[in-house]
Length: 343
Ligand SMILES: [Zn+2]
Image (cartoon, rainbow, N blue to C red; front, top):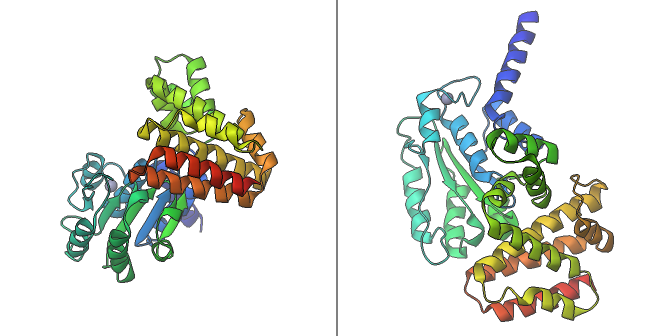
């Protein structure tokens, strides 16, 4: 009995170490670790969350666990399979190529992937396909993907990453295990970045963590890119007038974006981060420790349902931005639609 307990304890400790490089998101990690320890990894997983939350990193960790040669303590991080996944050269962990103006997966790529998926793995026990940022994937490609998910080949795991799984067909979502990533606690984020960027002053790191609301990837980007700070300031301005009863204020706040497609999209993605935080605050009464007023303002003035509707509306606009729709038109439509949700 004692031996059994010891071995379980040791397994748990080692297992935690496997994912310890991934900061925060304890719920998501324990869900994944539970699949791995029971050797019941779902054949299709969606990792959803804002840019910078580490979806690609986590997809890599899961891929490693799927091909790791150890039967215990997966991923070990040391075997030949784990090392090859780290270098993105494992023949059984495949990143299909994106193409076209939307830089996404087209139907041909998905069909090729489908044919390939039925071929037995080269070196490992399992084969993994990682499809990143699938928010813009067209309906024909999604339907082709659905066909694979309806009759999934044995020992094949599909990992998709996206900002919101709501951008995918419901029929796809219902066949996948959705795992949502959230920003981490500020102190955890600060500690992680301080360790990684020893040369940066603490005050700068603290500020970046605050502005990014605990989003480590964004905080790091912010510390190395000046433009991002400005983007967040605009997002903050727009988010703070969403609840304004004067539609002109919202139009004025978005007017600066109609000449820059990339910036427009980045700003909207930040507004989604603010809204998600407001939603958490509105439902749980607890914030992520963020001192920004805009989140409180949104949570105090909007119901959870309204916040979800606004997130969906903004997500739709982000997709239209990628489809080359006229930005002036998009901006005006967004303002009108947000006003009709709020009032
Ligand atoms: Zn390994």
